[in-house]
Length: 266
Image (cartoon, rainbow, N blue to C red; front, side, top):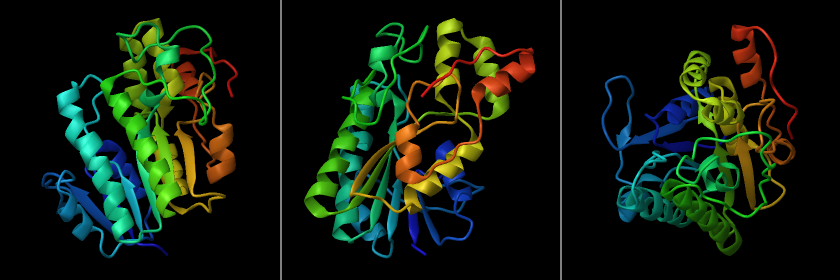
């Protein structure tokens, strides 16, 4: 059973990732101390520190980043560019088996946004996005995720590292999903319904990304729930990782509102 390192372990996705591996040896990294979770402090911008941190690991789940779609370039360039290079280089130098890179739906959303200045909106029946479609980042944050996917491709092909680029959707509890959709206009709600990732499905997809047997050195996968309104295709993710999502934003929202409005999706 592989030893797994998780960066960004104190974030929302990081905490679900911890729950996804109850039987594995985990090493948790964060940039700050938290009272409720014991972690090792790590500055991902420091390459040699990162290399030393992974000396006894088999798999890296790299979640650490500036996660804000609204962030300016100067705020994302160090953690999301230099930090990502350091992650792959540290994995390579320590001969790790696999890196799961936390990419994002924001790497491919620009073709479906309502407006270029409103990245978390969409309307009507958006175009289906498949993992091998060209990237279409909608923000500087999305641009950094495209960079990270490209870095993963390079290390997989050049150095033989197994890489899963996991385009994570919008992790929300059911109550938070209802609140977000009640507070947003139609285009904002349409986006939330498409991108929802339940906590339980988050654990499922991260576990699959870290442990599934891969057909090749690199996989790009979509990490969302089985939402009726989705436009990120799950077919390829199901085949590549055997990910079986169980939850659907439409079921959650329509149960509260009485009625069904979800659309069939890929």
